[in-house]
Structures are given as C-alpha cells and as structure tokens.
Image 1 (tube, rainbow, N blue to C red):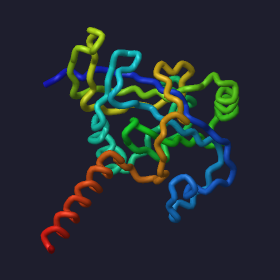
Image 2 (cartoon, one colour):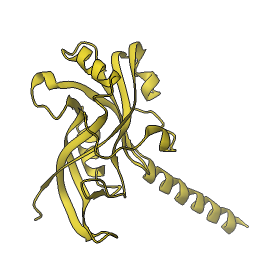
Image 3 (spheres, rainbow, N blue to C red):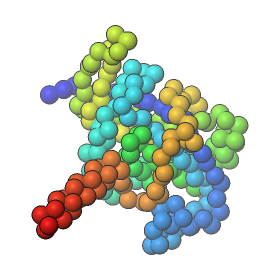
Image 4 (cartoon, one colour):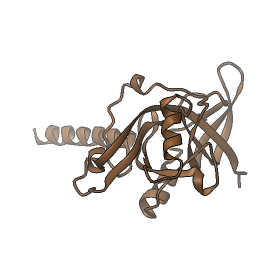
Length: 215
C-alpha cells in the first residue's frame, strides 16, 4: 500500500463580486435554489490538469473523481473555504457552491457570507489584490514519479482527497480566468465535462451506426 503524500497547489482567482439578495439559482441555474446570497461570490480554477506546476507536480484529469463522488454526491457535504489554510473558527469563512472538472482543471464558485466575522477584512484584501489565489491542501493516495522533458522528476497525482480549500496571498500557479477559453455552465451539481463529451461522442457513433444498419 502506497504512503499518502501531502500536496498543496495554488492558482489565481478568476473574478469576484459582492452581491446582495442574489438568488442562488442565478449561480446554479436551478429554479429550486431560492436561497438569497449576501456576500462575496468568488470564481476560479484551483487545479490545472496535465501541465507540470511550479511545485513539480502534474495532476491527472480523473484524480479528484472518487473524492468528489464520495464527499459531495454520496454524502452531500459542504466543502469549507478558509483563509491562508487557517484552522481556527474565524479562518473558516465560506463554502463551495459549485464545482466541476473540465478539460482545463478543477473549477469552482465559492461563497463568503456577509455574516462571517472577517468579512470586511476579506473584501478589502480582495480589493487590494492581496488575497489573489485559491489553494488546496490534501493527500495523494495514488501517485507515481516520472521523468520530465527537462530531465527533472515530476510527481504525478493519480488520485487524491482534498482537506481544505483556501484563499491565499501567493498563487504559485497563475492561470488567467479570461484566458481559459472554456464556457462555464453554472450548475450546483458536480459535472465531469470530459466524461460528458466522451458520452456524447459515443452516442453519436451509435446513432450513426444504427442509421447505417437501417439502410
């Protein structure tokens, strides 16, 4: 059995807005989500797939699938958002309201309610560009080493669990939100866009074969 390896990765916040009486359905596109949001809505990518980051790590596209299925879907738990990987009560400031994996990486929307004690501080730090990244901390339970093109060893993460998602000051692996070139479909339920596209392609091939057989 492989040893669990602690890993931490950081990417740039995409954008954020301060909202008041903003219905959650406007984020999730689900009419049943009638909760009113009052606070900060922050969007961005946390993990980038397939490329080696500044820490010498590369994440495989399916590395989070089992964790997301178990944590979010099967158990219906919230992923808490903290500040600078802090563990005190005051450091726990919000939750993730939407997430998906796609061809770029792990994308999510975080919500910071106006009622949390550090709200004005967090807002100010975002405005001033001091808090500028999303970071995850977790454990790789399946991994391997490979030799990179430049001769350096690369730590390949094949399966992992996330312990925390944080707002941080120093993103080591910046990816511009505007430069992603991928349309985000905001829905509360988890989506695996890569799998969706593969299923769509298979259905198209089956439909084409059925038409051919009917001729």
